[in-house]
Amino acid sequence: EAQVTQNPRYLITVTGKKLTVTCSQNMNHEYMSWYRQDPGLGLRQIYYSMNVEVTDKGDVPEGYKVSRKEKRNFPLILESPSPNQTSLYFCASSWGPAAYEQYFGPGTRLTVT
Amino acid sequence: DQQVKQNSPSLSVQEGRISILNCDYTNSMFDYFLWYKKYPAEGPTFLISISSIKDKNEDGRFTVFLNKSAKHLSLHIVPSQPGDSAVYFCAAKRSNTGNQFYFGTGTSLTVIP
Image (tube, rainbow over all chains, first blue to last red):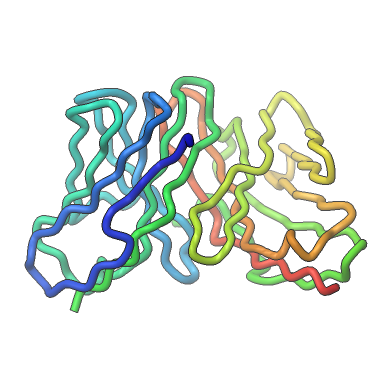
């Protein structure tokens, strides 16, 4: 089954404790992105990648890191999480140039206390 | 600064009637627009898209209209069904900016049986 998977689905952590949210897609997509969803703000793009080792900042990259060492994986790293990073996070992937339809993962609910 | 806006947080419609969801954008360089549907506890799923070279695109019960001069797009659902109850996000991008997307804040549609 074609899908985007994220782990963990739920995470409660404390301020400053480094964490990684994994994202994997099995569709051989070139492009991948991370978004956060917050009430009243909709979906905002954090980072995106257009290929292995090619990443770029989205609208709200502060406090986040990403890496794309393999085509299928695009982990989101929070080196020192803060309470304002409490949010619902989505990973997405798409085929690539001119194929703008994105496939989203099920989401990761992160709470930072 | 929100470049894509959905000014109606919620909308209720009777089953069988038309649902009209609206979206406005401020960046005249956007040339591709998409609508996504999101159920609770799931990631968004792609619904329909439109390029700026068109003013209308249809897919079954769903039609998207684009008015470039007004920087406005709308999604029409006819007839509305209870299964259409979800949050709808519009998104926009410039075709020469890699994988960068801008999403609206979402409209929660409730179709009343």
